[in-house]
Image (cartoon, rainbow, N blue to C red; front, side, top):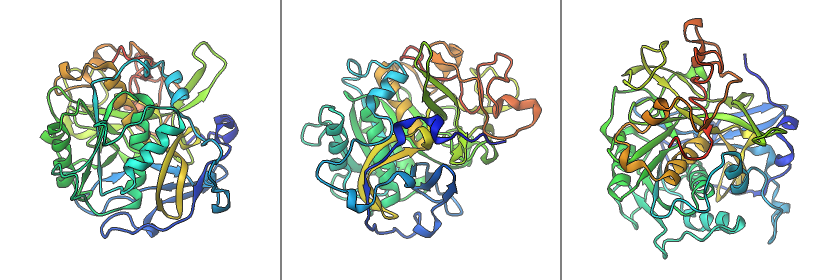
Length: 420
């Protein structure tokens, strides 16, 4: 049963958001406006940046934003209000991250489909808003390339995927502001093109690669998502346990990122988390039907790979501020985003803060399982749907034999960087 999280419970941080009106071209075969899922509820309206994938070998991005928090065009002005949604300081505080001191010399690659023509300028707006050091192409901090590494011949523009790219860049900036960023844009959202983009990201020197997209399982393994010395992270999905395991997240060589609802609390940590599941969606989890059980996974219910490994804030009701000026579905500017698209780049950036990717081998999730949640905030409340009693822990937190590991939240959320 889904548990609704009211806006009041989410806190007053989501009081408003700066946005605007405009139109973006739609790429044939990509997410068309009429296919975008918008869920009406007492909590407001959610718009998913990408529709469900086309039949066959296609992925979709997993970003979703709060349309009800976007301001109308009359509110656009030279000095708008501070953006709604969590910013870098809140996220760094919630997860005890050494973001101001760590990350130098690390490169996080973002793999997405299609082109965001405003990527560099939007990145500059976000970092300026929060007082982060500029990350530009001129300084060598930021690169935007195609799946072949070209800086001049980029894919077609697409507004939905541009939102995803802005979200990913902003989360890397929030968690690891000292990291370099490579945005690798696949020609389309097919498995084949995203595989090429993944390999290109590694070839360009990424220490960590984040993938905020997914689709149905299609293989037991995929060499594009398995590179020794590179930590690869992917989103678990936004439609709960019923959606089943998602790839690339369920590959044993990938760290599978689940989602939580993050709220401020009157406790020693100052924050509280439960499994994300409300009328906006729910974090994904499941037992893989394709991927063999890794030797380092210790749970007994799933005969094959269990999803997820770790988690991060992903609930749009406790969402993050993102700046995207390439209008899509009539929205642009400052928006509040959620979805496990927040979790993947955030956890990837925690790996970059730790700086240990070169020693991890192709199984970056193994240390998280070996340490059994040490160095992580336990998430022991909430569920993302109903599942058989034999694997109740795959959809309900706190029901496993250890009471800590669960499919929706993995072993928990970062408490510093010691487990990464």
